[in-house]
Image 1 (tube, rainbow, N blue to C red):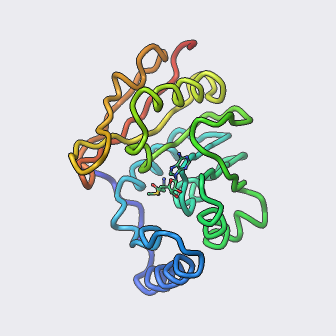
Image 2: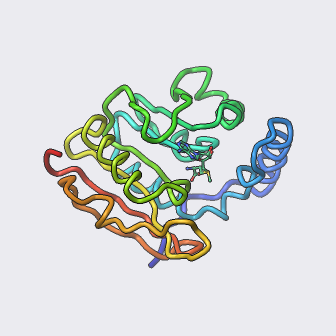
Length: 202
Ligand SMILES: C[S@@+](CC[C@H](N)C(=O)[O-])C[C@H]1O[C@@H](n2cnc3c(N)ncnc32)[C@H](O)[C@@H]1O
């Protein structure tokens, strides 16, 4: 599988960004993972490529971390949701322009809590492996039923890796949701991306 790369940042800019994020992680007491180099997260490039092709008017990312996916997509309405207030604070400081201009709304939210709004793309990646399958299926069902427009796209990841708590099965998670999906495999730690399109009613 070839993953098309998006132009990398200039090495000096990348180093400065990393240094700034390391300081934010230290000051705010959040995981240093958030300051990792962009090359360590190749799945983001594939998601960005697909989102840009899908061209959503309204985009929601839950578990968005520092917002490095949602803040790089131009949509009329973008919501960057995360369970951690400190992570959201860092996300605002990493994407100040999107924050100040309100191009992206940063919201505290836990996957499974009711969400206001209807979106044509919803992204939930790199945190769902800690959520039990039955619970995650219910969360996806609620999002697809209440917050995803017809023809909308749900993006999530699954891993095949015994060090993760749950290795999810997309057939199980999407059962009965009237979705058609495509799997893109071959990412780090046995990660695959699922791009699921809403084709019918739930
Ligand atoms: C590893 S980071 C991934 C960030 C982003 N999705 C990415 O791939 O670049 C996981 C993020 O999910 C958030 N998170 C964990 N559990 C969550 C939950 N149940 N609901 C919403 N956010 C959650 C964490 O606070 C953290 O910022």
